[in-house]
Length: 351
Length: 199
Image (cartoon, rainbow over all chains, first blue to last red; front, top):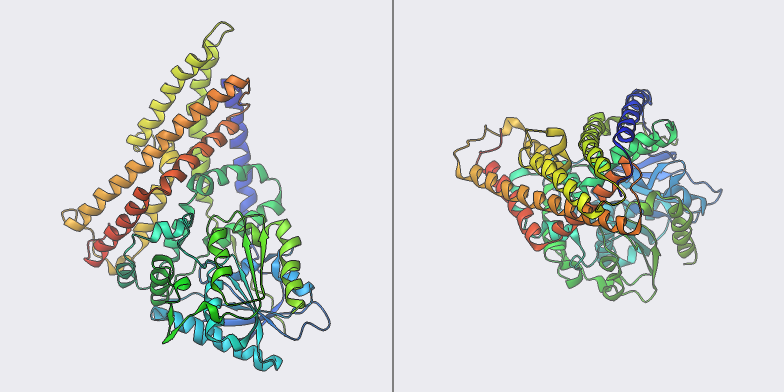
């Protein structure tokens, strides 16, 4: 039953307070926290977008470049968080030539950016850059989370430019019963939201994510932190993750309006009703080889939301890779480093 | 020439987050101390363990529930319940730059509507938290029947968190919460769009 006596509880509290005092001092002395560690070089800029090339880690990388399209939500350095937690490192080690789009931080001047700007203009221009740079007619595309949905749109509109498509924790069917984000946004007046605020504040998105598990994410996590106060390395890892969690860019208003209404509220992607610019997105035109990577314990993008791609895309070379973990673990867990980059690179290199 | 990404400072992490939760945990422990004291005083080989737990748990629940109903009375303890509402209120207060927003008019219909919906939101959170205490009592009872003991304050806190996540998660996924969450944000935005923002 309740084992600890009052004296034991008092002692535990004293110990906790002492650790807290020591830890606060340690925290202040940690200095800057680096996130995004691999050497890279900007090769193209447009507005706030920067296209980076990661320094290859083999003498002769694969001739077909791999472009990573990350979500507009949160920052893409999650793909290269630290030395021993970097999916990009794994892809480079396998011999791939890796590029990544950094969307930057939209501000009030970006309010009018639409999904057409992101898909047709930004992704399109980056793909064209890489085709030209590598003298290839088509490149490999890796879309992550929301970036996967944008990549699917691009691949459907320009199938000739994509040789192989990898989607990673990507929502396709937004109305599976376990989709808690759709549940939360279903009754939100998105027009009122965007018309009132312009861009969607990153803080509001962050609140949404924290509110999914508030007792763990805003309470217990910080109590547990006391346990690692004497481990500078663990503390730095913790702070790096904290930095990423709270580093939430605002979302360009018009792009958010369309994504929230068409994808989340009306589930138009699988209905073939999403329109980018003046072009309708038909997933059946995604006929190139597709690898769909999802996390079996994903609480943000349920596996069924991702796996719906199997029945909606037009590829006859469709494969899935199920990672046993969650939406964050698929980037940063030790097992992810062992399993995910090898699975993606082996699949790509075979095509 | 390859460039290394710029190092960033750890400013994403606010030490206040840590200190707030540490204070809350300490308040939780302080609340548990007299509970533990009474529990151990009345415990004897012939005693009715179940009755003892029920009796003291009712007292514990009363204290924690009081903190939820009157957050000003014991703010550290109230934070145990109100993490979601606290976070929401912080976000709501910063959604629109103050320069764009005149002070709230407490008499305006939009502002009163928002306050009313926020009250309903708080009630849902309170109910989930109260349900969590019932669940905690149930889990402790189940442990008692198997002879398992909670060995430390931290273990009890972790169990309490688990129970809250359980009942909160069920509430979060309910149609009522989805609908209320939408109404809450829409009502707040209506204040902004009419210039009746919170002070």
